[in-house]
Image 1: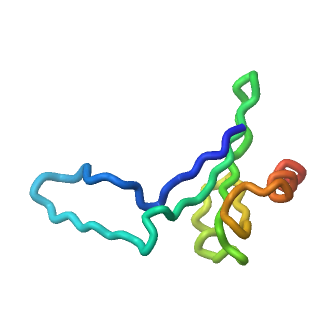
Image 2 (image 1 turned 60 degrees about the vertical axis):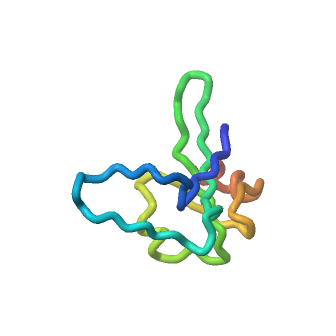
Length: 93
C-alpha cells in the first residue's frame, strides 16, 4: 500500500508539443495543489482499485463523473488519506 500525491500543476518548463504550434501556460493559484491516490498491491501482484482522495466537503458531480471506471473516490477535510475513508473503501470494495 502506498499513498502518492499527484500534483495538478507540476513544476518544470519542458513541454511536449507539435513544433510551430502555439503553447499556453495555465497556472492555478496554488502550484502545490494535489490529490492523494492510494495504490494497493499484494505479494501475488494483485491490485485493488485505486482510491483517490479529494479535499472537498462535498464531491462535485464533475469529479464523480470524470473518475475512471472502477476507481474509488472519496473526500476528506485535508485531502489526505484518513483511516475512516480507507476502512470504508475496503469494506465496500
